[in-house]
Structures are given as structure tokens and as C-alpha cells.
Image: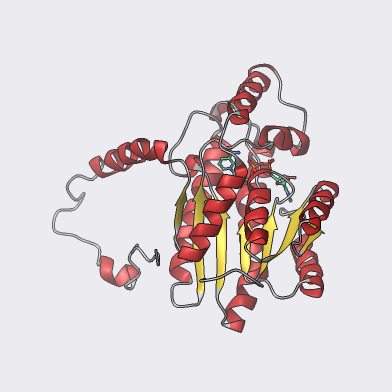
Length: 294
Ligand SMILES: NC(=O)c1ccc[n+]([C@@H]2O[C@H](COP(=O)([O-])OP(=O)(O)OC[C@H]3O[C@@H](n4cnc5c(N)ncnc54)[C@H](O)[C@@H]3O)[C@@H](O)[C@H]2O)c1
């Protein structure tokens, strides 16, 4: 999309952190922004701040884990701002820490509902309309460096963020012949309230013992992380360039290279000499090609 001015953007988790950074960047470039969040009071306060600076914004209540809530939010946005052409699936939670062997299934499922089921709901809510209108559209899904590598934190967080990356790669191929572009955002440490948000929304009892200590340590690390407004501006630039991967923290690149090398090293001879999949037919011409405009 060459310009976002006048376009309607729907940003989830916009009452804090990276979502707010995206909302600010989009609004400053002239987009009309729906700040959607489960924390509606905070979203409303931020809308007051943004509109007093001249932006055109609304605060919309949304629980991304509830598909009915998406339908209601879309109705509100269409009635106040108009048809959405930029969807930022940003809302998400950390998973806390803990070994896989003792991870609570209830918390695991909540992390998946928040981080990946939500993205399916967002796509189901807005992509059919964008497709039918045939206008320029853009979907940004928020993954993480933990959606490319597996840092030793939470199996739930890492697995859900790998799912976001995989989902978005598949979506990119599905939408290739339409006027809707896709991006996957993979930030490193960013100074946000994610540890607090996770503790507030997490089902069941609060994290205790080692988990609580790890959360406190993570909070301290994040407090010196990248400014989320810088991440928001990088997202805006990627939308304007139609860039798929948005890596905001290049210091992680050597680890990504090591992971790819590790993966490639896993390829040995065929398990059945003489047999080979017809890859061209399976992929139907949809190779992972670079498609950025700049
Ligand atoms: N902070 C980091 O270092 C970092 C790094 C990589 C990726 N991310 C990702 O960035 C995204 C945004 O997180 P953040 O770090 O800005 O955290 P944050 O807690 O500051 O902001 C997240 C916002 O999402 C909202 N939210 C959470 N669950 C919701 C739900 N069910 N429905 C609606 N709103 C909900 C919260 O109320 C909050 O306002 C997440 O997907 C996170 O995984 C963060």
C-alpha cells in the first residue's frame, strides 16, 4: 500500500505497548485508527490523547479470544470510521515460564487462544470484506523472535508464536493473487507491559515460586528494551514497502542463521532412495519469494 492516509486501521491490543506504537505511527501518517482492547478504559484514555493531537481514532472493546466480540467490534468500527483495510493482529500474552512436563494445560490453551486463535478470528472477520471490495489491504500478524527461535522461556509462548509465523506464511500464499498484502512482525525485547498484562489476564492462580521470579526478571529485562513506538514506526514502513518479514532487532540475525544452518544440516539422503516428492505440483508455483517493493 503506497499510502495509509484516510485508510481505516483496526489494531488489537492497542491500549499498550507495541499495539499502541502501531496505532500512533498509523495515526500520524493519516490513517483512521480503531484502538481495540480488552482494557477499554485505557484505550479510551489513549484515544482522548491521540484525538487531541488531531488524529481520527475510536476506542473499541474487544476480547480477541471471543469470535462474537470480533463481530461486534467490526460493526462499531464500520459505523464510526468505515471499512477496515489495515488489520493489525497484535494482542497477545506471554506464557509465563515452566518446563513442558509440568506446564498447566489450562494456561497453555489460554496462551493459544490469545496468541493464535485470535488471529484466525481476525482473518475471518475482515479478510472476506477486503477481498470482496478488491481494494488495497494489509494484514500484520504479531509473532516474535520467539516465533523464529526458541529462547528458553515458555513452551506455550514459543509454540504459539511459531504458529503465528507459520499461519502468516500460509496466509501470504493464500492472498498472493489478491490486493491484500501480509507481514509478520518478529520483535525482540520491547519495553511494554506484557508481564503485567499476562499476570492480570492469566486464568487460575498467579504464578508462584520460580515462575514468579522469572516473570520479575523478564519484566526487568523488558524495561530496558526497545521503545514500542520505534517498533510501530517499523511496522508502518513495512506496510508502505509491502515487506513480509519485519525484523526490528537485527542483533538476533546470527541466531536465526544458526537455526537455519541447524535445520539444513538435518537434511540427509532420502529415506527411500529413488523416490522424490513432486514439489512443483505440491506448491503449485507458490514459492517463498521476496515481494517487497522497497
Ligand atoms: N514486549 C516484547 O518484548 C515483545 C516481543 C515480541 C513480541 N511481542 C508481542 O507483541 C504483542 C503485544 O504485546 P506487548 O508486548 O505490547 O504487551 P502489552 O501487554 O503492553 O500490550 C498488549 C495489549 O493487548 C491487550 N490484550 C491482551 N489480551 C487481550 C485479549 N484477549 N483481547 C484484547 N486485548 C487483549 C492488553 O490489554 C494490552 O493492552 C504480543 O503479541 C506479544 O507477544 C512482544
